[in-house]
Image (tube, rainbow, N blue to C red; front, side):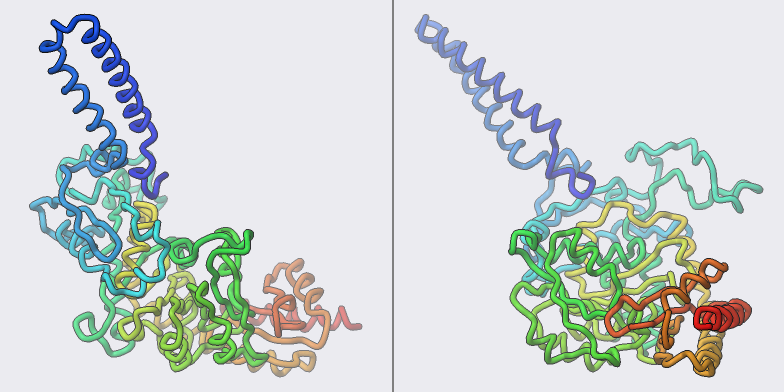
Length: 498
């Protein structure tokens, strides 16, 4: 169990059982000898007491699950934060912050965990009991991150290869033979600075801080983790918890719920893609643990007003998750400003869309510190690799490229919308706050999509989604790509309807 091997130390359990069997056998032999010769009693008392002590020690070690073995450090008193026990960590004397390798002083790593939970937080009330009591996996970098590192069974001779652009001349500046920082503090700080500036906040004045940020493999990892943390499985048995979704919406919410055997409560959007808030609140039950709001929506491309999020968050005892994959294209500001206003709002973001970095798979969950702490406890030890972290940090340090690309894409989106509306077979182009357009044709949308794709230009048929009859979703590409799509769209539609 990579998430928490301390809970399943099978080899050591077997050893403990062996010790008990040996102790029991030895005890029987001693008792037999004692009954045979009372004169041996004085000699036998000492071994008996010794063996009984060993037996008690073995049982105690077994019941603890050999936590001390996995911690790689002397046992210390646990610090209780809410319902979670965090073992106090020793730290090295080295406190230099190394931006190059995306590491931080161990004191800062420890401090992040100490502050990240609260006994009265919403997370402690909603999370699964087994998650709250989870002893997180302690990785090699929890104690020391600098010096001669002989603790993690890495290959000190170096990597067998490097990214293509680093081969000639050879540049292993990222030290790929070493595990990455499990906390990604540099990346978290950069994200906080960027998002806080967008809403006129700072980390010291109501804004988000690194303790509010989880870094994952795209936002999909965060979706799955949140469901695993807060929702008890059991849907196939007519039991367990549930999530709420508002279709048409992103399909991974449903997929992750089904994988984890969690119920799905459905409250559809209106035909104009607005939330039905009274119906949502009425549908909430004690089993509703997560409410997913996609804003801007996929495939709707419509943003949800922050006032709607506030109303829902203030009315439910559930975690409200605002999925903001496309927020950088939206006129509605990010919901990260609500994270410190509500203890049950989590915002998902990604570098896959506006940042144009879908290939590195990097996403974020931004939320209350106690929720983020649980996500850090449950995640795999080194979930974000060094190559991803380095590229993501560079993007957040140089946002001028991001902002220029957004400007170009918004211009192209407006041009594309105008040209689609000029086609007589296009019945509607939905307003968009994303980097795509959803439009409806009079007929044969699926055939239209397939034929155009067969000829080398791929869009997405969305006609099987609620309120999306005869709809196609097209991503805004370069000016040349957009022109070719429009040309092929008109050409193929004429062929299909001739």
